[in-house]
Image 1 (tube, one colour):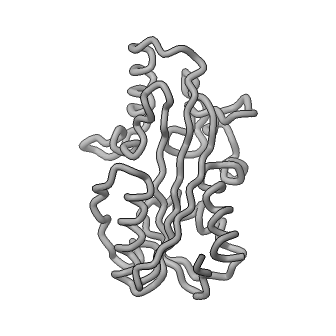
Image 2: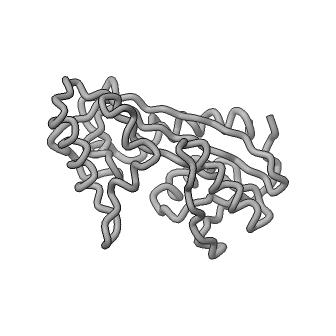
Length: 202
């Protein structure tokens, strides 16, 4: 496994919440972190059907464009009763002509479960795959997972995305009711990130 030995890293994202979360996790390593927006990079088209495939597209595009190592995350919600949907299309389910509407997306998930008569608990996972890519084309892959169940109605105004309907295993509150920094310690991204740190930074 290749170790990270530079002092600059590009986070291949335009998502401010994701940028803040990963920048906080990387804080102890003294690395200067920039994002796609800082380099005026467009969002590459995500044409793969897996988390790792789309994360690779984003990481390699940023590394090639900047000449710096780049870290990308592809993440989403997989609902067992929906055969893993929305999965890699998690953000797509929230798309509207006026931007993303995650209340609409959560309602869609709920309505599909009710319509099909899916028995509760509605088990689900948040998945995160981190890909660290170098300009020479090498990459390292780190998957993370966060188990829980879906609840309705939505609860809480913290977090982002589908957090208000996701209740992690071992907790009686949703991610939407959790302090974001507490959630970040136990999330799918934290799981993937711990593997990344052990593999490339430790």
